[in-house]
Length: 151
Image 1: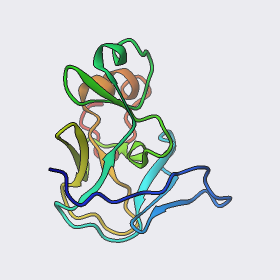
Image 2 (image 1 turned 90 degrees about the vertical axis):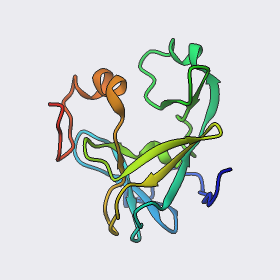
Image 3 (image 1 turned 120 degrees about the horizontal axis):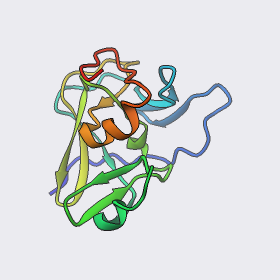
Image 4 (image 1 turned 180 degrees about the vertical axis):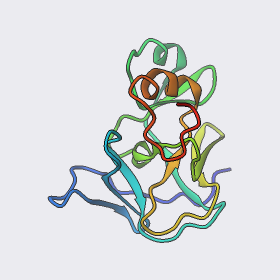
């Protein structure tokens, strides 16, 4: 059973100042150079706290495996993958870090993001994208996280 789901508004376009508030806890804004947009905490988040769900269109993993250069695919299992490319998927703005402050767990086919440590107001939310994504998309251009262990 999934608990504590936080509804989030769509992310449409960023405001003229480059910031879009997602809900009372997050905003999307420019991240470090080379990483695009990121998801930032507007208030403190406690370790173990549910952050949000990675959402999108559920597609067969066999189809996802043929989608070259698709950046927002999150495999649930050998049969199903979430295509999280829709802008209303707030979790798509969580950038990679080799020392992340969030993690994903799959619960009954849902990808749930939780805090693995306390996250301070203003801090960017990060997650480890894992080996396959890292090797295909990050390693060729260089990891931009401050604690890179894979360079």
